[in-house]
Length: 223
Length: 296
Image: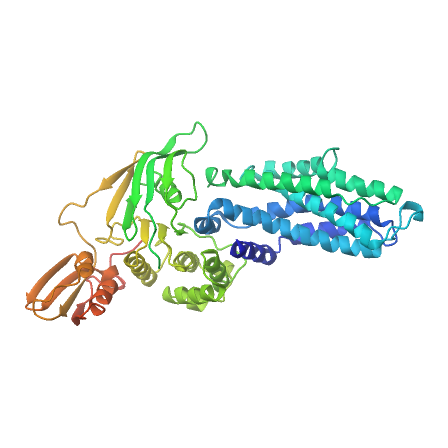
């Protein structure tokens, strides 16, 4: 698996297809986060914005190779494992991006609740923000996995499905990402920063299920 | 170099695309044993590639069972080079994916590029390789880690004459080392005389082909060796030779498919006691001469 991950990561970095989602995410943060704003609200924004970026990264990774090159790798390691390596690479990059963004946002934001009423220590804020970011990266990867190859293969269907899926994963109540993000937003009003471990666990479970479910039809639905 | 643990076995395998699609293959029974060379024939669009994808476990059967999981390498018929690596960089990655260590993979990449005459392109970005050179990369990728099962889907197409001969030799080495090789090629002279079994895909089924006696065997190298009078040739040497005759006491003339001449010589020279090689006569026509018959 290490060899597959190293190959996929190198493929992603050299292809430079990671640039558009990363630039979009940086722009999104540049517009929405300014230094001196309440830290928890900004962290919520940071986490929520990562979800569609993670979904996009998955889409990039699973379509990075031409089918013939994919077949060479799949013959060596099995199609399901080759596909899982694509998903994990995208998830890993999304997590790294999210962690970096969380650290930067925590450092430049005002360590207080809205209106400077309650002091929120930076480590405490980071402890609340990181699990929320991870939950969003995980769910985004799950959305990406469920809305691209091999589940949806035509680009015309896959791209709108990814966008819709990302929206549905952030907005409605009951989604782990929504729970984690709204925990931060509410925390920003009250000054208490809950650590969203339950949403993180939920997101991890859902993502594991999505990855497992998409691994199965890889061989069935080739070429 | 470990031989396949078990046979790869297809039992009543069928494949169709979609729930109601027509059957591409149906009722296919096939055993691929370690150390054997298997040829699959058939007209275009009959399902040869589907069968090879099933053998490489790239595709799952719609019905029936496939058992056995050898370490597999696959060469597709067209290898697009739209990958952001150099040839050597890609092969080094694929070597580790095939299970080699990083240094061993880089070494194997250089060796195989060199063998196929693409050593000069090691540092060239894949996107700038010609069609033939990227096919060499595809072939090298499959041979890096001595696979237990090598699946070649018209792998010779696009290769130059020297690389085609080199691939035939590599296939002979692989089977001699206990690996199984399954191939499709439109040239009936490809590895002629060498396959242990040939099958034709006809109407979605698989039929075993038996060559009529006296069928052309393709280019043959004739090797004359001398040993102690009354000495017996090594059984492996007799097995791969298409004919063996004792011309004088202790002197033998062996005819062997050109792709397997190296294997024959190695067997004879490493036998105990070793045989003395008196003469090696190249095949006629020489597959490397420009007007020979082994065009793709």
